[in-house]
Image 1: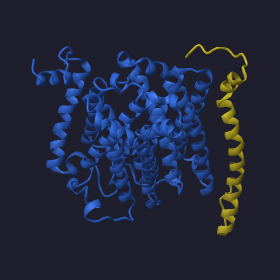
Image 2 (image 1 turned 180 degrees about the vertical axis):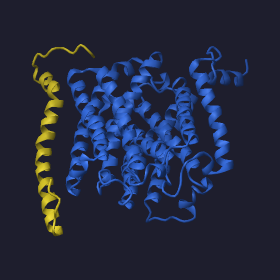
Image 3 (image 1 turned 30 degrees about the vertical axis):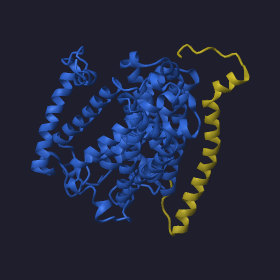
Image 4 (image 1 turned 30 degrees about the horizontal axis):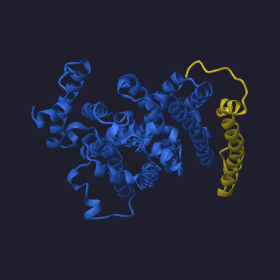
Length: 56
Length: 396
């Protein structure tokens, strides 16, 4: 990854660009992860017949 | 039989053998700890530690204090979930979590008396020289106040055991106020422990150093506390199953799954803010160095992996997987605090100048852990921690 910066502005521009892209990824990723995490709860709430847990 | 004999029998039941493998091992560690304590307070820090000018803080701060405080966070997370967010289905987890938190903080303070050069000066920040601009003042104030809060929160169990109904009723009335105060104090000092390292940007490796350190410490304390409650709950179910009432047994599954869900979600957030930290300081190139690989081991092996395993465990309602994952998270938090405090600290020094804990430091850390376990065992086998006292049914 590029690390030659002539002025502070270059550095800030570079790091901010990447950070903002990561923030978009985080917004999408965290929402998707929450759906994954609550998947079985949602199925139960909607009355979908899922396989009963063998573990609890 | 006299009343005094009855009380002694209540505290030390005669039908239990003292010569168990656990008690013998604990006894040996306690004797060793007492000897080391005498050496520490007669010979000074140099007699039992490898601390020097480069490393003012060693194992007692990195493990006993930093990891201890993070792992004791189960107290405020559980009581906040139940009393502030109204998640009453986790109520049976409150007392064990408060007890673990109280013992954790108490041992942190005891460890601190060993670590500071002149422990009798510990009250000085409050009565002699306030030093309000120092983070250490804030940490000292919060830890001492929060230890008091935890003591009061825990004391209801002890008061029920002792039959002091009036005092118990008075303290019970303060539950919400104590919980709010506990959350505020924990937010402050959990983050301040990370902020302590902001003063040393040249000493801490850039991958661990970040202006977000206070946020990292606070956020990681949330899932550390939740995981510790799962871990401790699992052990308690193994060894104190007989002392638990039906409510406790029935709620165990949903406490485990609910806390794992919370921990998993917070870990995902933590993962992202750690990556933001790398991006903000443009430290990507450092990931290809030996320290970078170690950093990735910590982040991927002890955060990303357990985050995913918790999620799978929650989806499948797989308690075994969740309980095993909680061990990985607890180890990960210990590793993180040791990395910040010791391993990635003074990372540029040659190996011969690096800090390796003295056998005395390890011995006294074992002594503290053993003391904690013994006091925990003493309390849970006598006081209403895993069951509701018959005189106080539905009074919580």
